[in-house]
Image 1 (tube, protein in one colour):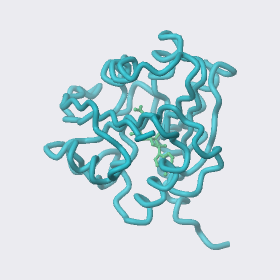
Image 2 (cartoon, helix red, strand yellow):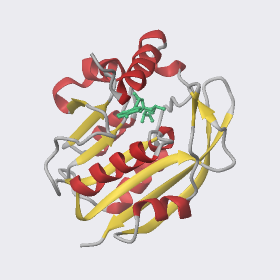
Image 3 (spheres, helix red, strand yellow):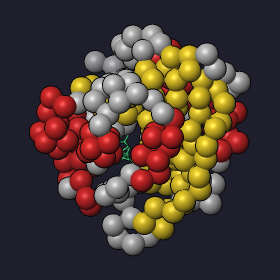
Image 4 (tube, protein in one colour):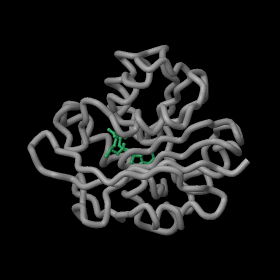
Length: 209
Ligand SMILES: C[S@@+](CC[C@H](N)C(=O)[O-])C[C@H]1O[C@@H](n2cnc3c(N)ncnc32)[C@H](O)[C@@H]1O
């Protein structure tokens, strides 16, 4: 059988999430304050459709449910990554195992808010970035929002042993293109569970109607 481009990515993340507890990974965050602040400021309805790409074992899902959002899909390339949250939150969330760099079977123009924390920056090849962008443009509706959080240029060049492409708000703006308007951004520091500092940029874009 021919190995798919995504096989090694999947294996990497499957092994991360089977060898570590959710709060042991460097990107663990107890509260996703910037994401929640940006999502609330978008003023989407509580039943707006939110897609969290590369959701992993994030506590963002709990934060969103507490805020009253009730139409959330969590997707990830690794079933193990989603397993802990799936066991706890079960029917409160819709779950999808898929590679975001391959064509996604989600209806066109159906997503009100795309959320990505610490996923896009792992895509270093044009084919991965292009695949990601095509999915985003297919599913995010006109007037919808895109929230992307990545390592910023002064951040570490690697995470989880993988090379990263770091972004600032301008680079994310150029990546998404003229159909998306940058409406908010914030540079901030994430402290890892082991106490290291990770500079991030969070951005909120609105797609033109
Ligand atoms: C650094 S973790 C961030 C997890 C989560 N967003 C958070 O903030 O806790 C990156 C996540 O992206 C997922 N991922 C990596 N490559 C992916 C791909 N091609 N498609 C979908 N998910 C992917 C990994 O399995 C992992 O859960």
